[in-house]
Image 1 (cartoon, rainbow, N blue to C red):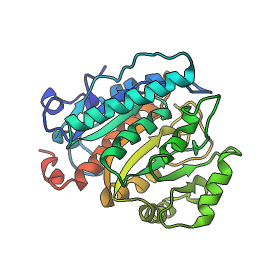
Image 2: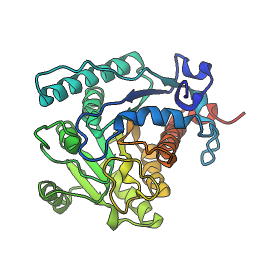
Image 3: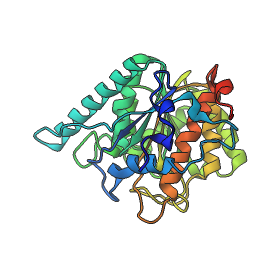
Image 4: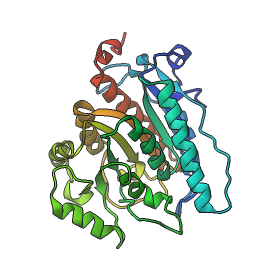
Length: 315
């Protein structure tokens, strides 16, 4: 098992000035189909030990800027019923995120899930620090239900709760319920340059050239400060099957990078998460893809950081 993200030397993990802080949130309370997201963060950390620390795209060793790996977030389960438990979890996680941001104000916080219901609590903490925050969501599902299975904190409601804090831009969507369809439809008909919600369906943007065009439209709808949330099921399940609710179709590795690269380059990405990984025994592609994605996004952030590029060049 990896001692920290990337299994990097201790001096790059324990530095006071680490550019990145990694928090695992192995929370799984509301998944409704495939289970296993509680094991996702540990699987990503372990897989990260096999990711080359030299980034072949960026031609740098990002870890040299420091990657601080914190202990897993643990919470005491309490509450008379599931909704109250979920509410207390949200408050506990938001409090933990706030304390991390206070303790490491110059860090970029990377959260590893766990189910997608961790994201609203994280976003609420970031919103206090960045009042004009917007959220970029890469996902197969809209996650806009007001409640599901009796709880407004279900992972199927994650982005509905995020919308209560800030605007959302959705990419890769290929599944809606009848409650979500009118919400998405109304937002798309409004045609606002930067409204509360913008949704881009996967089937409309297949192919790398179209993804590059999509990236320009995404930028026009995002504020300066952006939080990124990646549900691993945004990928085509033919390549990344390790998720609880796989959807046919989806984005490729290069599609995802073509969407995210310009966002990190042209906006201030203040933090990001990767969620909904459910490891499949004997099939390591899913967790390795998630780990490499995390490291690549760290690299994109480092490249956009004023002093980053000069400090991470490989020796």
